[in-house]
Image (cartoon, rainbow, N blue to C red; front, side, top):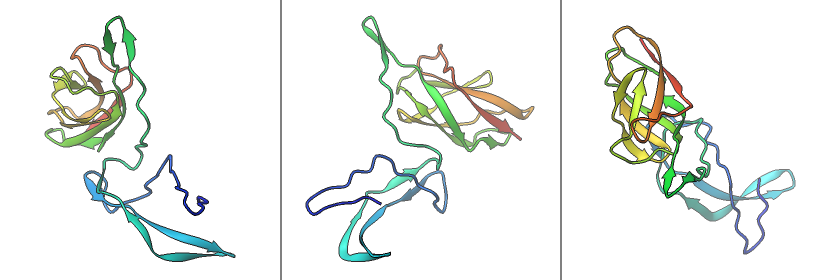
Length: 165
């Protein structure tokens, strides 16, 4: 609950989406309505609402935060990627399954790669926190470590696990 007076605006620093009908690739809009608290009841204020532009959901556990600023080394800017999650976290050994990689500091560059175990895969850059990639074939199955590199050589310290079945 946010207390708002006449002529004032409410600012939300965090918005948590608890559930949607689907997860990956779901587009939806948020409808904000104004309610007045009277005694122990909320009363709708008629004809006062706001509808957001469409939003696409990649994960219910992904929180929007300001990205950390890259460190500056000499004249070049060094951006180290990090991985938070791979969605879905499992798929067929045959590969070619679409997964979303969530993290920070991804750079849209021709050298951007994702490594599943020892296999390099070229992702599609969606934005600095989101990559989309097709999984490689992994005949033996099992768990594999997923890492990201912006330059094709230096891989993230953080990783996620992907299970091939």
